Image 1 (tube, one colour):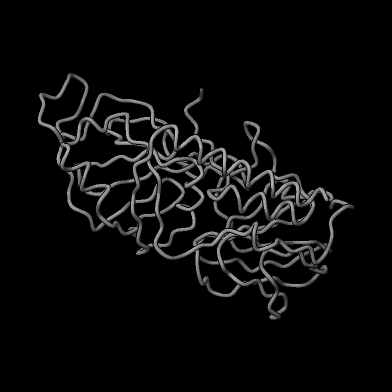
Image 2: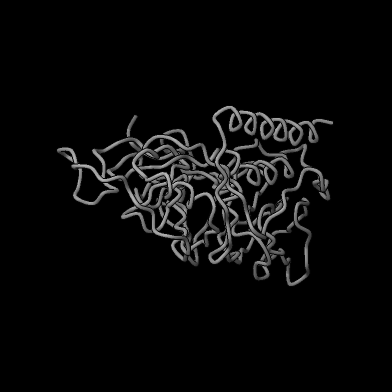
Length: 302
């Protein structure tokens, strides 16, 4: 109601998996490492886990496993190899990262400069406070393959068409779903820009009062997370968890919520296809995703 986006982990599944491996609540604050991992010196013993992108952790230079909890001793340095697949790794530390809550969340919203550590990206020399370690955390706990999610390769993103899809010509809608698109270099927490497809044409109309002159402009409307806007009809942008909550571009549909995790793990120049699904199919996909999340949580309750 304040017009502030949800922020938080772009890959919500990887967030949960990493936290559960170290005995945290599923939504405890973690580090989201985009394309490049940090180098961290620990000042207390800790149990850590890394899930999501394939970016191998190294403890004092020794290779450590992904999707597995392992111990870091006070004074040791944890670093990462270059990323092999995916785009975002999630580093959970037992006790969670104990930055203050802002509007009920510890996530960072960089554009608004709120949350996290002083509302900004981390920088060299920052000191991150940790919460108390969980006594139930187990070293060497590994996520089975059936609960891991593959990253990399060409991705299919399921879309429920709607909202302002009627503003596009039928031929433009058909081409949008038929063509293969490429993630542009402008792919971040605000949104993913896609390139390489044919420019999309809009149905001609007299622009209403309050809309801009470009045919992709509308009178302002709300933007759901995952909605797809096409400024000027040129390059689709899928809005993600740090996106503005409304604006004046026509949105042709919405990437369903389970596939936002897939989107979060896409690198620039990776290929994607958009697949039209009905609302009922989207809801069924969400049910299957929630079932997978329940399986994940039940694994740690055994």
